[in-house]
Length: 346
Image (cartoon, rainbow, N blue to C red; front, side):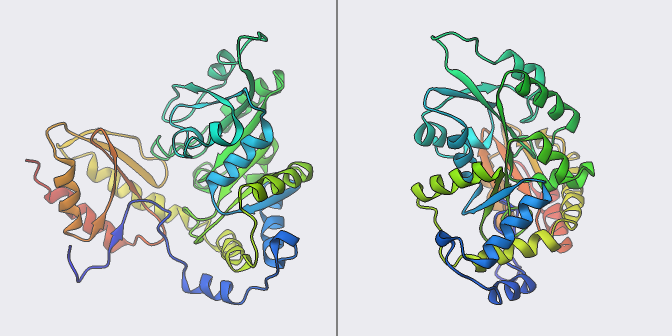
C-alpha cells in the first residue's frame, strides 16, 4: 500500500471520523448520568430526534443493532413472527438477535433490492391457526443496505401500513440510513413518523457521528425500551459527549448527504463501462454493489486497489460494495476511478 496517499476507505460509511467542529461540540458538552436520566445533552438529543419525526420520545443507544433488537423485543413475544426481506439487516446482520433476544420466528420475503411490497406482506401473514407462529411485526429497511442503497416509494409504505393496520400488526422502520432516502425523495421525517410505530435512526453512518442510534416511539414504549436496554447492558453514564456529536450531525450533516450520492453516481458511471463487471446494482444513494465476472480474482482486485491506498468491502460470491461518506473527497473518487480503469483481470 502506498505510504504517501491518504487511505480512501470505501468499506462503509461507519468508518467516518469526527470533524473538528464536531469534536469541539463534544468537548464542550454538558454531561450527567444517563442511567439516572440526568445527562442534559443526551436528553436534548432524544428530544430533538423524537421531534424531527413527530414522535413522543426517543432512546439513545450504542448502535442500530441495539435499537432494532430492542424494538423487536418490545413488539413481540416468544413464538411470534417477524416479516422482513431476506436480506434485511435485522435478520442477516444482527447476530441472530431476533432468536436470541426475542425468541421470535422470521418470515423472509424475496423483495426487490431489499424492499418488500404490501401484497407480499399480505400474502405472508399467517392464518389464526395453532400450528402457525402469530404474525406480529413487519420490519422495513430504508435505505436497504444489501439492495445497494435502494429506498422505498412512500406510497408503497402507505399501502404496507394499511395492511398492518387491517391485521393489527406493528410496523417498525430500520432507518439506519433514512436521511439518505429522504435526501433523494424530498419527503419529511414527519411523514415517516406517522407511518411507523417505531423507528431506528443511526447517527454513525452517513451522518458521521462516531457512535450511536436513536429508537423513536411513544413515551410508554420508550419507557419499556429503557428497561430492555438496561438488561442488554446498554445503560450509559456520561455519554453526553457522544450525544453532542449526534446533535451536531443532525444540525449540520443531513444536507451534505447529496455530495455522497453525487460521488457514488460518478463511481457507478465508471463501473457501468468496465468489461470485468458482471452485474451492477442500480445506484440510488451512497452505496454501490457490483459483482465481478467469475474468472476475476476478488483477492487480486482488492489487492490492486489496496496498492492505491483504497479499501473496499467484499461480500462473497464475487460481490463488492463501495460506500461514499463524508471522509471521501473528490481526489479519492478520481483515484478509485483511475484504479478501476487500470485493473487488468487475469
